[in-house]
Length: 305
Length: 314
Image 1 (cartoon, rainbow over the protein chains, first blue to last red):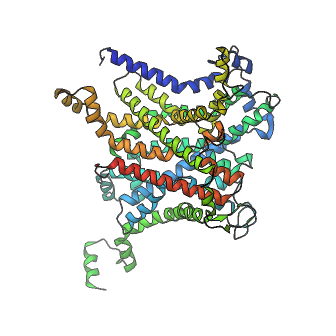
Image 2 (cartoon, rainbow over the protein chains, first blue to last red):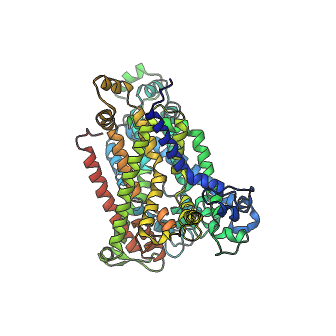
Image 3 (cartoon, rainbow over the protein chains, first blue to last red):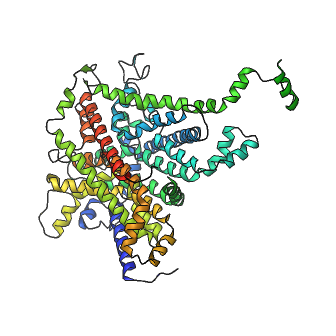
């Protein structure tokens, strides 16, 4: 399988290695920089090489002694909860809706799908403010009257972080496309054996949907883990329910105090690098473990989508 | 009992004759299941998707702080604000960023996918390295990138000092700030198209290229006449979804340049955010959202039409 080493192939390798190095450089820089203190950091701006392993950045983050302002554990927990919620429910909705839209025949089926599809063309920004207002004026919640006036509704509460976005039309679309590639014979065989719909879905379709579901799980996990804008808008006032992305952002301002550096003297970049590393590492590890399934899923989509 | 029921009773196990209701349920079981699944979904969708679009349209014609008062109808006043500076500049920036990022990102991703498609050693590693920036949080990485460009304690200037050159105040320069944000967005967005293009490329059978080689085709011809046409659906998909994405950059502009110097990197999403939550002018923000939506819709439709010319409908 060894191909001849031609000039062309050498160039390809050069391009790929330098390309991926450039892509990785900010991350490498950030990783190295998180282990330096400020002195070491400025000593060599090309790449901060720690001369002594400086763990203070990390210790500050995980140290509960810095009080209510920094609650890394709580934020990680919140983010994991949100991720799990937003993987299971939109996933189940997509699987069920995909089934209903492809395997069942009834009047109005295609109309329902077109109705759902119409939202994909509209940019997310359009939903931002109305959804915020809906959370803030939710009748009966958080001090609101039955007409939704007066209080703050679900703003700064858990429901605002869990209610929107349970139906993801993109995933329904993706699942629908995938259902079309599965032959009907499997379901028919199961039906002959007397399975009802739920059993068919669970035993027949779910295993076959694994590649596309892996893609869905990864996309959703990354999206919710990194979700910054919505928690910023809807839960800024309540640090107890912050997600990791939001909390880390805020830590940048508090961190200097926590480390005992008077604010405003020098921006503590190594600290922000440490924060970035903590935020990114779980995703990188997850991706590296699931990469094979992810690629299979994407290939399935690329060849048949 | 009708005779038909008696006939059924002969060939079926001994159960009670099905009632009209049961028979109706059986005949319509697909519809019942279908609507059982779809009704909650459509209901949720109507509340969280359709209603916001309609509500946004309504709010865009009002003046409202969202907190202290009720909406007050002002007609097209909010839209007229978009005719005055700095709003045209913001629209220009948004389009500029969207087009430049999309073109360079897609082109570069295609090139890289072509390279990766050769039988290279360690392909998975390269692919992972190209994709990992996409996994990062836009907000957090924007902070990291800011460290490079910060004028007085940033990394670029520290390097310049090492080389005994004068420092450059990057954040004051329109050109540098725009370029930096474009580079950052390309860095973050490259991975997705690379993975997609590579997957599509690997779906092309080797035999096609071999047959072409027999016919005397050279590398460039094969690229133009085999690869590109076969990859067209994927290119269309990447361009259309990429357009939607690159129109909506937010975190990078907020955290690296905050729209500045003087609004030259201000984009629609940032301005809408500021209007809504900093200036509490929800009507203006809603109008901005509608404008962005319409512009994006127009671009997407044009995009799809241009690219699908001659292509059989998918």
